[in-house]
Amino acid sequence: MEAALIAGFFAFFGAVAGQVSNRNTQRETWLLQKRAEVFYKFIEDFDQYDREITRLKTVNNTDERHTDHMLACDKLNASENIVCFYLSEQDKKEFRDLVSQKRDFEYDYSKITDYKDPAQIQVLVAPWLDLSDKIQALFERNLEKISWY
Image (cartoon, rainbow, N blue to C red; front, side, top):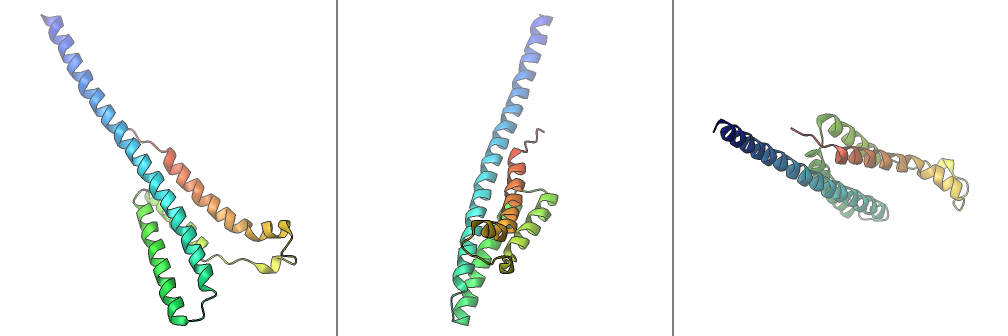
């Protein structure tokens, strides 16, 4: 009788522990999927923002340019804020710094003498690509994190 009680207790304890472990695993899986979706959406939004800013350089109407610039900034800000929901405080700061640098980035055309030379074009875009790589590395680092609690 005593052995049956002990076995029953351990079976119950094992079932509870298994359920808690399974719930944490499901939550972590959901969180990683959600992070991946949000990070992907941000990359798309930044690409769209960059295309819009490039387009606005050719717009002569100041009011239209200002309005469209504000709309592009607002959309990117919203996407940036959503990404920050999924980052630690330290990663939020790093992410916002990188996004700010990428937003303010200006190509240094003084480095180019021949616009058809691929090597010179690579030198021109290298800092932009470096910022993109740093943002991607931050996203990848956060997709690898699984905290068991």
